[in-house]
Length: 456
Image (cartoon, rainbow, N blue to C red):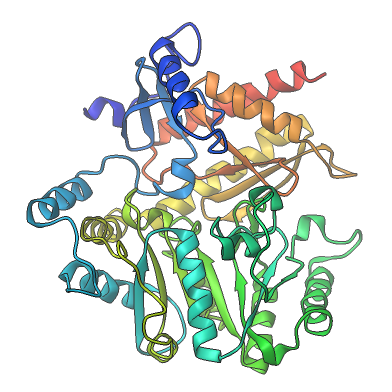
């Protein structure tokens, strides 16, 4: 099977989806709710590294990676072996009834590598990013004995009832209310779309004043348990939180006794050039109090984590956190190998190499088309924002939609994001080969030229 790991995109069928894929997609439409949307022609047969083969034999380069789940790529042997070995012993132990060592070993490893405040740390496991974020809020409330939280414009935290309230884009929550009380929203520092004429320092000051205004207009700070921040917004458009703003938010939290929660569900596990973006925060003196992680933690198995100091964790009332499948034995076995794989293969360094190459290409080769408004991100967590006019910054979602469809027809899977639907996210597995990366960039350039011509 090694040929797929090093293969290049190749579409063999006359149409996409091919006949076998079309049959399965038609069955999907009959069996699965329409609300679980998918506009791609991809029906996966197998995957290796950054490549997938569909049921018709077409080869695709995957730049989405399960929306950040596959930083280590598809089908890595250490994870396969670990899961098989664990399956031979047992599938599951519920931690309220018994103890399995894999949970303990993984918690110990997370306590070692997660850069939250505190000398002694503790970690709990749940099943999804939304569950991790919701439990982080519960833990913050349990520790502070305060009811309210502050989140941000552009935020995405999940689809549970609580995290739908926390999420900004209400297309993800349409018709689902009423939502829990005590969730208040400030404006995220989206520097590309800061008030016209502001430099970065002035923009940061502006956004800090908008945050302080929440204390006046929504909740007194003494009633705020936590401020929840994505270090780089995902669904909001791959918008990084400026470090000077993070430092100031940390100071605001310390001033009022508020906990700072870093939602690293999408940013974690080497994508940023460090294991977590919070490591950059810690080095700048503004580490979070609580950090959530998920997605790439177990290479595709359902698992997520909440890490905080022992003081914060142990203040949570007994029985308020946990759950049946939390910290499943096979998921923990895979996660331990994921972390080892990242360290052994120096994927943090590789993320920086990939990120520089992609950002340079976007700025120069794609920038020549005159529709690139902004290229931003950290490491290989990159957003490409497309606009109709660089002066007016009018969003160009039509081009992004066309490119998602066009690149798929050429064997490259990309995904849109952003408040205006005009940003292309880059979440390619960090094990992508240089030849595969070059092939993907070539498809991007070719597709942009074709789409712009068709949109005239």
